[in-house]
Image: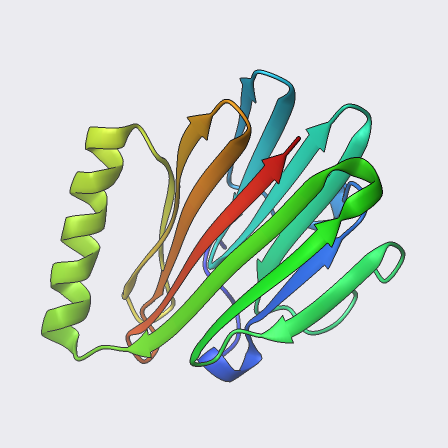
Length: 181
């Protein structure tokens, strides 16, 4: 089944930052894209309601995982983790490698009509920007969406990630920047 198989809430979502690569066999990947630009590579993975961004730059690797999964997550190489509920900003510098990670996370619960409108707007944006998208239907027939839209710059990459989970009209938005020297 493509959809999350258990009831989830915004309270279970977390962001994890790793100083290493994570491997695809740990996740139920539904969409994948590689972005190469200048001196960095960004690998993007989408799972229903979750994503992983993996940056490599001059032999260094960092991974951002946003997930509702609570168990069986890797601990090796973990730099930090924090809950996604509400609004929060986070910054971490990998000084020796010359990489800075910044993320802004926002969650909300929308009424059915606003959820539906947001779903449609994001699909339009995804088509216009050639964003990576995974759509699914949950057990109750609700429409879910995970999307990553990337902007490339010479010394940084920006990723806007959206997860719309039909159970409760949950919306999670993250804006992540990886900068390098």
